[in-house]
Length: 279
Image 1 (cartoon, one colour):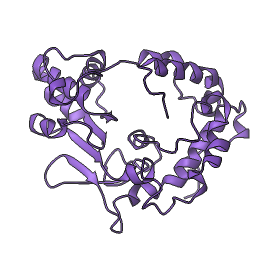
Image 2 (tube, rainbow, N blue to C red; image 1 turned 135 degrees about the horizontal axis):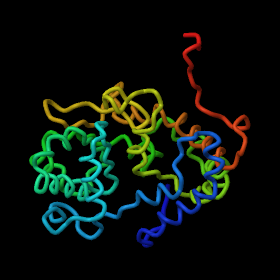
Image 3 (cartoon, rainbow, N blue to C red; image 1 turned 30 degrees about the vertical axis):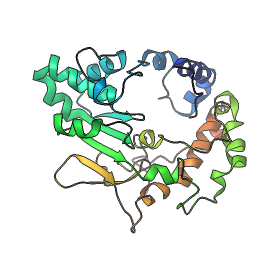
């Protein structure tokens, strides 16, 4: 989702206000959509002034890093996917704070932490590998560039597909209701979205093992470390993501229709199996 430059954090609240306008339609199609108030309760701003190793230390706690600490230390044993769209400073600060203030719980927190980073946007990965070597780390360094970000129109076999055209985006996304209206048809780059795609439950179970592949790409473990990097399929380290770009885009279009469709039967939905379904 594109957001306006130079407007601080207010745009997040503005977007949730628009989401609230279509919420009643969305829950008709999937009851798991959170309320706008719940989304507002989850907004915590992190470090926005300092990057890299200088952003980690005793005086560097933020509401965002504090929230990461809280989640990593809660009693829910499920993995916690920490998405780094612009750098690792708040994640690094949270792990630092746990080590300094809750050392007896560090191993538990680390066992739950799974980082999905888009590129390397600061100098903290090597520092974290040294300080917290057991944290699982997925690095999307190539797949997003050539499929959904700034190089989508090069080295991508689907670059001429209609989903990349301004006309398609306008018809199926940006002209569909108030939420779609926030999406700029003229801006083709999605940038960091694969980090979110990775945790969408498509049935591919990619969050269980990054090497299995899914909408967020496929990754291979490097040696004996906990670093996972872009996998190559047929010698192409972008294919694990571009193979899904058409169904992913069509799913996006279908969900945008949910925002303006009050009746379940009038929109498309993912197929669902029941215990009685034939194999």
